[in-house]
Structure formats: C-alpha cells, structure tokens
Image (cartoon, rainbow, N blue to C red; front, side):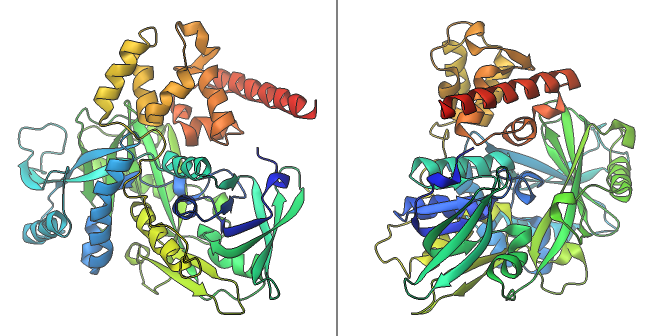
Length: 510
C-alpha cells in the first residue's frame, strides 16, 4: 500500500471515493493537466461498483419512466466504452421472452425502436422479433419474444483500470485511506484535508484547490462526518442482489425476464461455466458495507428463473451471491425500482470559498460522461485545463483492435500456457498481459501456481501495480477466480500474499 506520507502537499483536485465515479473523475481531471489525488477508505470498487449486474446498457425499462435523456446518454456511451476498453467490455445479445399479460407486444416493439434509434449505433446490432418454438431452453408457453443488443463489463476492473490510467498520468491514488475531515482555509482559498491510513491509523494533511465528494453510498454522510454541515441532498439506498449458479443454458445470449410484479431479472452467461442471475430492488437502511442477500431475495430470483427456464435451479445450486447498495438520488418515488438512475451535482464555490462538487446518483454506464461533466464544471476554476480525452484514449491494456487477434498473438508467443488461461488474461488485462508474462519461455518462469491458472507472476503484478492487498482483492475484484478456487488453494494464496508483504516491509525498512 502506498504510504500516505508520500502525498503531495497540494493538489488542484482531490477526490474522495474510489468507486467508478471517483476514479473516472480522477482520470479525466489528471488527463486535463490538473494535479489530482484520490483517497478510498477500503479497496477500489469495494462497495457498489463491484456489485452491479455487470452491464453497459441503456436501460430498456427506464423508458417506462420517461428517462429519455438518461437512456439516450447511456446508449451513446455503450459504443464509446466498447472502443476504449475492448478487453473488459464486449457486445452482448439479450433475449426477451414475451408474456402478453405483462407488457403488450406493441409496447415492447416501440421501446426497442427507441432503443435502436435514440443514439447512433456503430457496432451493436439492432433489435428483432424471434421465435422460441424450436428451443428447449424456455418453458413451452414462451413461444416468441425479442432480441436486442447491449454490453457486458467487468465492473471492478473498470474501476481499477481508471485508477491505473489516472496514476500513469501522474495522479496519486491512495487506497485504505479515509478522509476524516475537510475544511476551507479562507486565507489560501484552499481545502485542508485530513487523511487517515485505515491500516496503520497514521494521519496526515494535504491541501487542494477543489474537493470532489464521490463517496457513493456515503455521499450524504460525508457532509455530516467530514464537512460537519448538512447535506444539500439525500440519497436513497436500494439493495440489488445477485446469485451465481451453474450454467443454466448453453446459448451465448443473455435473457431478460419479465416478472409479474413488473420488475425484470437478467440471466447472463458468466465466467464460462456459470449463470449470473439478478437483480433485486429492495429498500436498504444501515451500513452499506454490511449488505447481504436475504432469503426472500434468493427465493425471488430462483422462482423467476424457474418460471422461464426448463432447467430448474434451487438455493442449493448457488455457488456465490453478492449484494450492493445503489446510492440513488432520492426523487420520492414510491417503488424502489422506479427511483431514477440519473445523477445530479451539487456545486458550491465563490470568491471566498474553495470549490466543492458532490455527486448524487448515477449508473455505471454513464460514469465517463458524469466524470466529463464534473470536470467541465471544475474547469471554471482552472482555465488552463486541457480538453477531455477519455472518449478516445483507451484504458490501460485496451490498445488493441479485438480480443480474438490479441489472443492469437499471445498463443503464438506463449505456447506453453494453456489457451484458457490466456483467454482470461486477454479479457482481464488486455495488452498488459505482456507486463505479467514478460519474457517467460516456460511455465516455471511464472512461479508457483495456486490453481486454475493463477500463477505467482500474476499475483505479484496485482500487488505491485493494482493496489491488491488481500485475497478478496485478487480473487473477487481483480479476477473472479473465487468462483473456482477451493479452500486449500485460497489458504495457500493467503500465505503467499502475507510472505510477499513481509518481504516488502523488510525491503522498505532496510
């Protein structure tokens, strides 16, 4: 972990929060030439941003709530994000079985027409009607439906790669570092920011011309605890839970299921051998770090799935589950699923007050546009700032045309590595695979194997370059190998990480 004592004493912009919005703002800000720092009290993407449905999508159902601006912006962003991060994002087709007593076919066709035409499509195919009569995947009463395009994303890696991109451009990224206080200094017209290392409890102070509150579920709480003032807006915490089960069907398409209560559930091919099923929308109160799936949510997801598929599942089939709290802008909607996924800013600045920009709401698909708009607003204070380039500059590892070509290149260069392992490298690290493998000429050059193609070389890379400190950082957020590693392999990995950290501490103290 970076030592907070190494923080520069003064920043143009300091961001609080290491979720997707925070790191997106840090990348954009540093890319425009503004000296930027960011602190995250836990690991990057440790809360909402690693617990999503893993989709880059316009939000088909948001059309029912007349969220046309949000949907249009999200649809356009799909193409942009697919171009800058082809390793962790790719197009995905979705099948929507038609249940006429829930939504009439004409309404769905109208929605899909808007979905196809609200924004320009460069790579994603348009929608069409389909038949399930010859398919044995769905229950017999589901005979027709629709198919359309959206995108898949590895959400936690999206966060890490934005942070890595910001770091490579000169930003300071500090994980396990909490902002415990921030106050304006009227003499210097700067913020004095108090930070605490959550592992060592070491404290330090830095200054910044502007502060961004991108604390996600803690955005309103940040006002109370760190700024000691009332929050201008409140967020509404809505819990979304997912389950992972053995692969329900062999098709490459995902399914979007309509339930009797009007909500939808996705069934998505996940990590080759699994299906990801979610999500729920449940009001949540309490600590976002303590969120977990309830038995009611398990039953809900299992029942909706079984109503649609011939392959039946039960709670005993669940190999993994996760829950996240969506910090949505409180628009006083009665139902959780109707709460807007749009975002808004609260901006406070004057001749005597250093700027404070707070982010309320948002969704992962529009994080880059949100970041661009946020930094545009901050640039009113920084006329020397350059133009935004995040729509054309690839995220780290994303500088290649397509996954197939890159995989073929690595298969030729590293023929001694199993192709399935190289496939995972490509869709996790892209061209940065070369940084991990370096000039290896035989499998032993990668060091100890912990199981399922996880070698010491990859673990060391994650510790040295991607802020990984714990087993969970590595097997759930940097990779998804937690789905397949057994207890013994996890224990072996834990011991290895501990030995690496001790060796690093010994080197630093020498």
